[in-house]
Length: 245
Image (cartoon, rainbow, N blue to C red; front, side):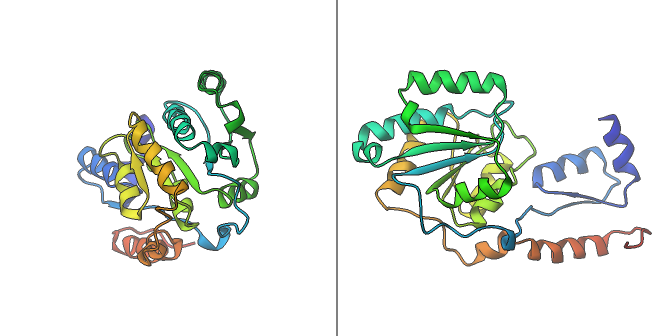
């Protein structure tokens, strides 16, 4: 907060990536120009969906497990889904996790997996290179984004997953910024305690009742090229004296 109070009043303007953060800053610093520009992804650096998907229902969580992030609802939904659809279990359905897991979360994850009898259906790949993690995503049929208690933030991976046309589930509460962005981009949302909704999504994907959104506007919504033009207009409207490098 001390750094914020030093930096923001001295800036010609502030750019935020969520409406909520922009509104909070405007309230705290009424004399500062604050603009909202949603995040996006560099589509040219992302792989296409793989023609060689994982067997069964391939589910992926690529990201760090820390803080309030919890895969418990996904694990409980997976157990219910497998119980209702034994062929999915027999054909290799698996949740794959890529990324750093803090010790506390690793212990909790291990206990939950064991308690649910999911040892064969959950695999942790550890920390991977960006290329390897994206290739893991490209072979999956469902990607998970966790956004528990993210008051101001939207995970950047949401934009990459939508750009890759991977069906994406955002697990986040209520009217959070992540939920609003997920809806805007055509992703699916579920509250952290709504295990039934997560299970229904798994079932719909398994039965071929849904796929990634094909709205042509999505390409514009998640492309950095569109953001560059918007940021340029924002910068041009800020009354500053700084010269471009």
